[in-house]
Length: 247
Length: 221
Image (tube, rainbow over all chains, first blue to last red; front, side, top):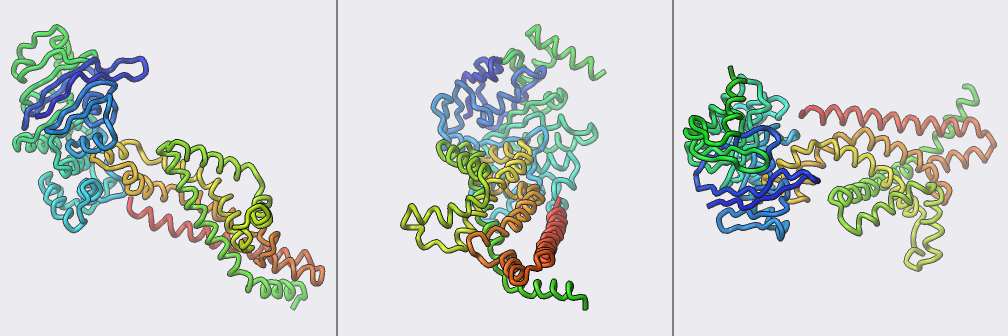
């Protein structure tokens, strides 16, 4: 059971998150949609404390971290139970694809290299890039880099995976291969929070869709409901805008 | 043979036995300065309270005062106020002075290089549960060192030329050897010409080494 309670985050005077709460069931896939600048990414980044919220509580299993009292140790534990896939991949440029995927095992879990390598190879096989295992990121396409990014996030063996617009930086023809990997994860019941602009993908993969606007959750529900019969005026306006763009 | 050239060759022959001394000074001071600069950089990066102030004071003081004065402070100054330093050798004083001096300058080389590692990689490293120290050692420094090589070689060139001040506390390095030869028969021009030539050759060798090193390290990316 994962819960996010009453998260508040300010950047200077700007209140980006105004008390966001969210419960996530094990194995649930949640897509977060909404206009840019409404705090979707910030919410994800508060979950693993890349941004420290001013207020709020994150609970993952038996670990509960309160923003007011969070210690370095607690944050480290939180990060070992979650992992993140970034918009700009953020692979370690001085390490090969294989070494990138081994890094969570070796550096965070303290595994021996000889133990970590077969696990990492298996994960790379899952994203279909075994033939690229010994390449450096600079030799990989954006789509391949992002698939390695996902394999690296899987290596953490997380209870929750956070996807921060994983396809936004990709050329259109490379989006599909990345979405397919995420779909595979969903079918294997990985618990995921996905911030995305790919509405079709959200509709297909998510168990629940959350529409955020103005630093809070405006509407949530099964994809069917959100996309076919949204209740909130703001959701309707946003979806119309997005659909117009697609035409 | 032209007597001048013959004389220059003689100076070279007399400098050669002192060459290991110069090289040792450079090697040890370089090692010390890298260690100091790394320490200061890490303290600065993680904004360690108190230590940060100490480090800033160190950098400011050693950049703000002349190298000769620093060498004198280590060799003549410290033993006069503190028993422990009575046993300091000339060589140790020179290495300490040069090392502390170069470390203060080298901080800038490291700082720029560390900032060149993109923030996204740091976030990725933190997101998989790495501690501050691991992020520093495994992600930042391996990439920063490659970026820092040109300016580190620059620092090393400064150390090499700075080591010519070792004679001021009585170490017989190549400068001292040339000076001794010159004052023996007053042929200053040719003796110092030979000395400068030797420094120049050493610096050229360093530049060559830098090119080779950069080529090897660039192969991976």
